[in-house]
Amino acid sequence: GEDVEQSLFLSVREGDSSVINCTYTDSSSTYLYWYKQEPGAGLQLLTYIFSNMDMKQDQRLTVLLNKKDKHLSLRIADTQTGDSAIYFCAESIGNNDMRFGAGTRLTVKP
Amino acid sequence: ETGVTQSPTHLIKTRGQQVTLRCSSQSGHNTVSWYQQALGQGPQFIFQYYREEENGRGNFPPRFSGLQFPNYSSELNVNALELDDSALYLCASSGGQRDTQYFGPGTRLTVL
Image (cartoon, rainbow over all chains, first blue to last red; front, top):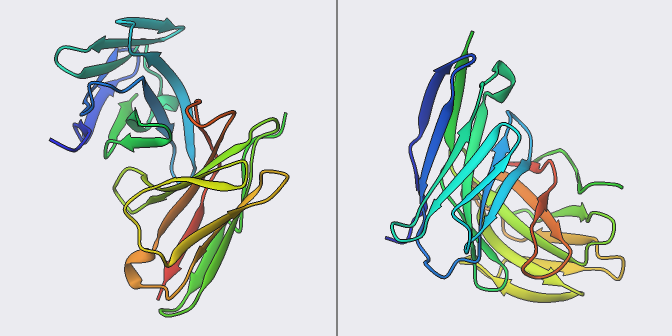
């Protein structure tokens, strides 16, 4: 398909791990990104992974990339209430475009 | 280092009017991209400016136009506003055409 797909909602308990999944469209995408958006705010870059990697870890964040299935995931360890936000997966397209998913709303319950 | 800034924060216009949104890129960045984010959706690419020239455009009509200035700040102009233009407009800057993009806080446009 032509869309970057994400599940719309995820709810976890504080202290648990969160896993947000994404299926992207273009096998030639060079970079894949995860952005976080809090209510009323712009997008904050969380992390990105180059297409020749299959894993990247950055503190509590782990990104896994399966190029064969065009599947990207973001794992947040020890999820905190401050992690509650909408998380967007995005792929780089061509020279300048980025294609975003519709976002996954993560709710962290105390 | 100053991040990406946008103005105004909020704007209310009526159908048929014209609007100009502004963006200052992050220090050292020469590329600005504009996105439209409708409620409940991900951002959609409008166009990109690199060194004052349009460098790619998404599926938006010609009434969406832009400029980039010598200091790499940018404007997005929308003519003949329609109700469906109501959205959060996001600007992102990067150090080059394919580099990682850093977003501003956005301008929320409401068209009545």
